[in-house]
Length: 251
Length: 204
Image (cartoon, rainbow over all chains, first blue to last red):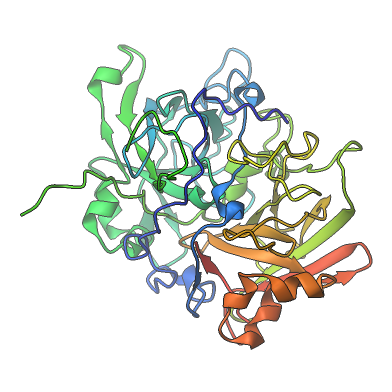
């Protein structure tokens, strides 16, 4: 596999800021029943990063296919396209210092416009769209920017409480430059009243952390007569500078 | 009042959910034609240097039941203890070993099977060598923040005895939770999410 870094910057080798565990959802969130038997109960072993956590795999742009960031077309039959509200999702991957993170792989997956996943474990009665697979990927540019085209996913009921519904969401998997930055999260949509009722979302204690996972409508980035746009920035753990490094971008 | 640090806060983690395969291993769940292969499904080629080994990993919940909807990623050094990463400053790693792999648990057995090589030793921050190890990252429905741990090797007793991370584990009875058992060319490793045998998970 090619491992061009996607950037001309000198790699940084500092350790990462510690993860703020109270900002993330705790392992055990009883309102989300699946967490009850799957949450570690003992204290985590804390240590400053070693090279095993500081280093991480680098994916080159060469791995990407032309339609990888176009979920409207990457599973569709020739000449056809997925059904639903056409949207662009765009933003930047930044670290906690506010610096763009270039050359990192982002993968995303979602239900179709009716709220149905193309997966044998999903039995929701909303139909599959023969032209929608639900997966895509891209690699961030020099400024950490990314964009993809898709349809807005529908909300759907799920077996947790007797009548629980997931807000419309897109799953994101993000690599950083170090394996310690590895993150999976979900993007929600501005104005969705289901966000504040969802047991998975409510595992996050701080309202500001939930708002930071909520994409905002961006009318300047729409494509007229084609697609609406939502802006969603993703923040990865920041990195300490090393005294022995020449860091032209400063702190 | 004082100045602001002007720092951002890490995006909060959310579960990968039950349909993680769609995004990360679409071919595994029947979505074909989008990506030629699932990323991370092959780690070694004929040209890769090092001893071929297999890892058979399961993830067990608080009742001892194997998870059948989890996904595991591994990250490791090459046979000489070098990472294939722009951050690696000590030299060039084996160009035929990427060092990262991804595997969903089998939907029937719950087993993740990786074919890889035995990693070399990587130095700790103070220069002492760590024992050979593989970093694990585990996500699944019901796991709110991806779980980070390591797999060490049962036939590396001396190195394990010197390892600075294993040495930090206060309750020595828990050290074996990080050591995979060698059976021929295969190392078997059970990750226990809860209970008496709960695996030591990391915050690093």
